[in-house]
Image (cartoon, rainbow, N blue to C red; front, top):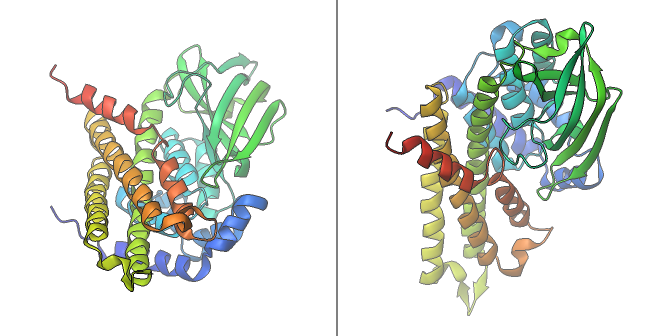
Length: 373
């Protein structure tokens, strides 16, 4: 199998890498995360208008480039390497995928705005007690004339504080349905907060939120298959983001070991530390292969796709934990300081282990999908 990128994909990677290297300052990014808006709108605008990144994997008929999972892999890895906090996976991969598969005028218009960089869309699917299981939905949507009324609550809705629109799962008479809700809709209460990895999330309460009939995406009660696919696509994307983070962490750790001296020589010359850095590199290479496995199976049958994604997520969850912890230890006390990049990457790698299902969930799902029938 040929794992080489096409010329167009190489140009995409190189252009984004150069943009991030020259425009994305880690210190400025952390300041925006901690005390500012939680992101950098000018960077988002640049990704949309200067590079066309936001439409790279979206259809041409709504202004995209018409790419696919490999383009998402290239972009997510580059963003992970730069430790970007902008909501690419949440808005473009997860919400964009759901809108594209739903079709219809409402979805198409919102997709076009995502490509232009004028709309931020976040999915609100997790509920108290449901954990990572998006199929457990207590939020309800009842018909009210030509529209719908939503009641219920969601927790840890990633990127919701930045969003102009929310995609909300709710139980209707026909099953699980998906609705578009304005982020400032009457009856919607949001508690925003910053997560451990400097991202933003919200707990949301829907107290009689009224939406028009066209807010329903797709057929009533038929949202679960597309939600399951979106969860796997999001998991594959954060696997690629984790690979980008781990590449940077391994590189920085090796460089630090060359520069840090102890007993009159670089600590990288000590065989025991060399072995630990080799172990980090081996975990990274396994993670890269696992990410390829997930990405190249996203268009396969649901069970095949789910098995590949769970294998990748479990493998990369283990690698992220190992590489992050080793990097911090090899940097000594500096590894967890705010001033050093390693500490910020460690926090992101820790959070990535739990997004779209923690490692234990994916190990169990893989076992279930591969057991003898």
